[in-house]
Image (cartoon, rainbow, N blue to C red):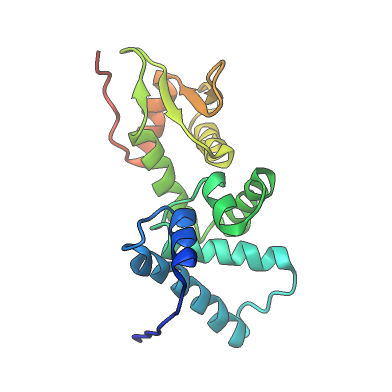
Length: 192
């Protein structure tokens, strides 16, 4: 079903929204389409009795779940992005993300795996023998990588924060290779 509508926004509103969601003002109509689709799906599920949510947190969780597919292209967003959109603190965003990963774990399995693969393919090797470094503003995604490692082989080294960094994590060579194999990620080669 093709649904279209017009929305009147002032110049300041357009500038603010574009800045919040991280696009240019010219890209805003296309960027907002995913948000609109998520909102409409939320309303339709409510009207049909599929999601008669009563608690505010349940509504926010379902809203974020819909946005994973419609706004974020099937990838799990980081806590900073969630904070910008939902106007929440980093702690609240972390909790919201943890909740949807748990509550919708089967429906989000592809999105979670896609995100983990994307993180691995964006890693950089410090040396030929590792470690591989990833900079990630999402503790929840790192926890998912560690859960995946535990499921592969409990003796593999877990991913840990690089000493002295805020959001950079280290992955040993064996852990990195196992994760890439299981997730179908193309391993990043060391470049001297």
